[in-house]
Length: 201
Image 1 (cartoon, rainbow, N blue to C red):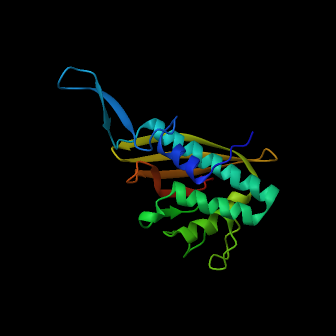
Image 2: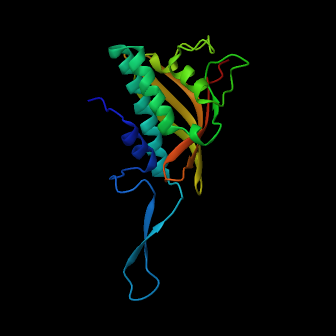
């Protein structure tokens, strides 16, 4: 069954691994230090490995959803979903996002705006005429293989490979780095997205 992501569900998926919808802010239980024991809820901004893995899964599932909607419902639906994904998963509301697409010629190989990212996801933008829409290529599975994850309090960095498998079973693997930061409501947001094809001799 294909998962459907709304802005609410995707935001929760990016906020916490296994979240039960109680809060988008990470909470940890620690023993109370005064007046009779018990336990107290202590808020923390620290990003965990589970948070990062959940964010990666949500991103991959969203790419599959965009591709499937394009195949079954057309460009308008896929573009609307991609727009929501960028709002929910990335930090464009707070400023520039460091976005380097896999296949984009200079001078548009590095982009910092939502418009540039949306164009790369789904094309259909005359300001980015070379973009055909990487998320429209009938992807049916996205798998992350992390080489390393750095957890730095309320930020995290990852580097590794991501494999995209289309409806015909063909797989394309790219090198990817992501940077994450918590927003003011506790949700994980992408602040760095760097992608390239592996070097071949």
